[in-house]
Amino acid sequence: KLYYIIPLCIMLVEKMLMLSKRFKRFVFFSLLLSTLLFLSFAHDHNAEDRWILIKNGIVVNHDSERISDVLIHGERIVGIGSNIEFQSFVQSSGASPDMLTVLDATGKYVMPGGIDPHTHLDMPFMGQVTADDFFSGQRAALAGGTTFHIDFALPIDHDLRRGFDEWKRKAARGCMDFGFHMAVTRWDEKTSFDMGDLALNEGVNSFKFFMAYKGALMVTDEQLFEGFRRCRTLGALPMVHAENGDAVAALQRHVYDTLNVTGPRGHGLSRPPGLEGEATHRAAAIARVVGTPLYVVHVMSKDAVDEVARAIQQPMLLELQTHVSTSPSSSTPLATACVIGEAVASGVALSDSAILANDHSEGNFTHAAQFIMSPPIRAEGHAPIVAAAVSSEGVLRVLATDHCTFKAKQKAKGRGDFRSIPNGVNGIEERMHVGWQKVVVEGRSSPSTFVRMTSAAAAQAFGIFPRKGHLAVGSDADVIILDPNENHVIGVGSHHSQMDTNVYEGMRIQGRVTTTIRRGEVVWIHNELRVKEGTSRYIPLPLFAPGGEPEEACAAVREVARRLKESSEKMEGKDGGGGRRDEL
Image (cartoon, rainbow, N blue to C red; front, side):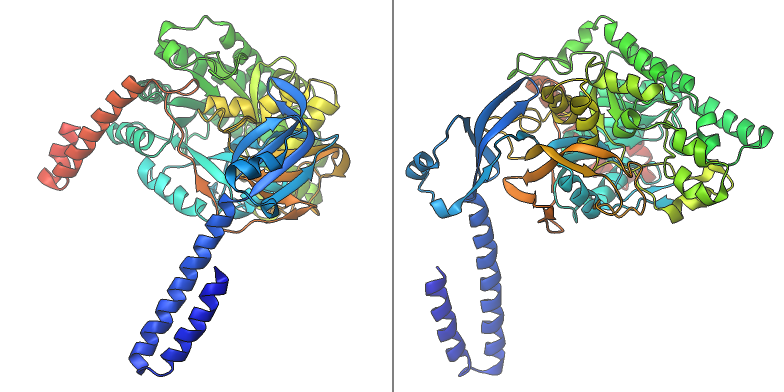
């Protein structure tokens, strides 16, 4: 096409020189616009014609493992099998061999791209804003083998719609697929209406309720109950940060004022495992009474693991049958329990020893403070239990991160008062490698279990399986290649986050993600990132997940929401808003 366009452009330029000044400008800008449109078309056309053939890899899903080839066309997987011949696809589709990239995966694992369902990017919290925005955080994720994440959007002045719109604006500068959970921080009619609006019109299928952070994000038990009921009506999945916020607030005062503990060590003392276990039990009990599934984020202690295990053993209520089922494309159930438990990388790999060892030294505050998160990183006996629960035992289904990064200077805000240290650790880039080391290398379970906990279970819980979290014909071409024989050491010097510390500093990993394919494009290979800012894509998530969407029920709920929205628009501005409130 360029052979025809370039001579034409030259001819037009020659003619333009003979025209009036005003008309010259018109022709010039017309040519410029045409060129930009052509380049845009050429880029899209090339993306559609892109082919990748992964040869002789060990293809792993949550329920299978076999040596196979994987063929990708555009943004989808189009073939999986032994000895795939690209020539047959050339004949049937008219593809050119020049469009094909061949990746040799002999002796390597080919797996679905990771899914991290728990991140906080570009988030204001405790007087600071997280160090990683959507571009830096997503770059780091791709370098570590994660190709999709679900971020937590926070309300603005308790307004869910304003918060969602602001988070979507911030996420536009990223570089990979993402979705949103929405936090609920108070309860009233508008909150209930906004939940329906976001669920039915914006693809938000999960809402998070904080049982901690009293005076900021925490909700009461009554608000929790009402929020769970609204989730059940909408077919959305409620989530909880499970700590007893009232007791934590009282303990913080006691530890700081009475015990005179002011350094990072006071954080863990004021948030003991028993308060995490108690809140997990309470949330599960409320969810069971309401009749809704429940997702418990960042389970950090044996106490909470025990409560999740106990809740799973409870017989499923009849009302849950429309919410929870097995995937129709798999014989292996992923999330059939009333409660879905989530572990995080820091909870399976770290202990509080680094905090205790450095707490008394003023010079080591920076080192100790980097480990402060909530619930806290626990004493050494807890991590092996959490690791076993998410791997061999399967009590916890998902491995996430709670990636929420603050630089050393930001953490220093809490020097002299542990209650003011911004809570959060890194992990969006390290999660896949830490999980591989703790589960596969250390012999707790298999590569298939690794896929279940790092992608498949999250995809099923939030309704995007098998589009994501699975390697099958028709699935998104989000794929990683992991070399089990390539060793590396995690550290600040090699990570892609904007952080100046790393809680996994010096951890040796046997195995490495050498290639990441996002939407059918190689974006990480040979230790090189190939991404551009502004190439992110928002993925709406379906209601009534896990297990799909009962169309009749969902259509009825959507119709009610549509009528409510029309009514609110008609009444906007009438009676000073009083009539609208009564109608709602």
